Amino acid sequence: MTTLFISDLHLSTEHPEITQCFLTFLKEEALYADALYILGDLFESWIGDDDITPLHEDVKKGLKTLTEKGVPVYFIHGNRDFLIGKRFVRETGVKLLPEHYVVDLYGKPVLLMHGDTLCTQDLAYQQYRQKVHNSVIQWLYLRLPLRIRRKIGERLRAGSKSHNAEKSEMIMDVEQKTVMNVMAEENVDLLIHGHTHRPNIHQLIVDKKPAQRIVLGDWYEQGSVLVYKADSIELQQRRFGK
Image (tube, rainbow, N blue to C red; front, side, top):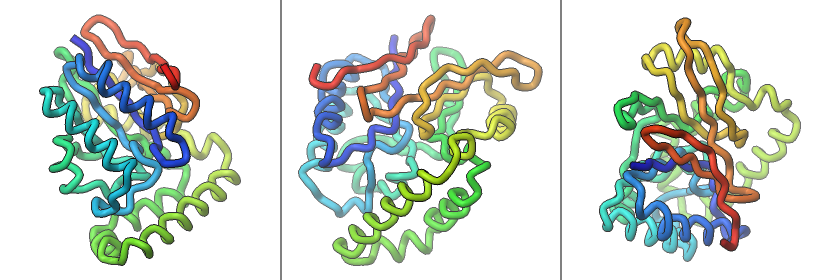
């Protein structure tokens, strides 16, 4: 009995080694899991389900093969791929989950999130997020020609990289008070999220009771997987090229 969690792969044509590691992971490890949860930022960017590239087709094929073999795959939008939509779902068999989702894992309620909404000290990002998640803005954007969306996406990524370089690490990390409030509202003592690229298992006190916050790692230097079993929880790495 094993459930796997990953996030922040940021798949792109610039890093084929990451894509290969992910596809191998799907075929050789996820195939034997009870379920796979992808907690956002599977792709470096996603400008619409109609953006058909060899990379996207390879990833969709890998996910479709897994779901057709009976392994459920769940996905929560990240800040890079929040435009993944119904077509992607149809072509992969992946099930989309809401931003906050409480799942029963072997008898324990666990809150799942991407994690960007926990970074409430980063006011500029939260304002930006509110705009791009506006349904009207998304509707208009997705009706632009693909070439224009690509240019917009490139400018946004460049701007994001520049702004983040000027921010302190503390601002870009989660706000502890926000974490505790969300966990208390959802009545859970375990939260799993990604986004910050700082893999760790944090011990907390929520409503005067012991609690944990598990942060998934990114896939920039190696694959990062949370292996969740009924009797153990472990953050593990997967080497590229293996």
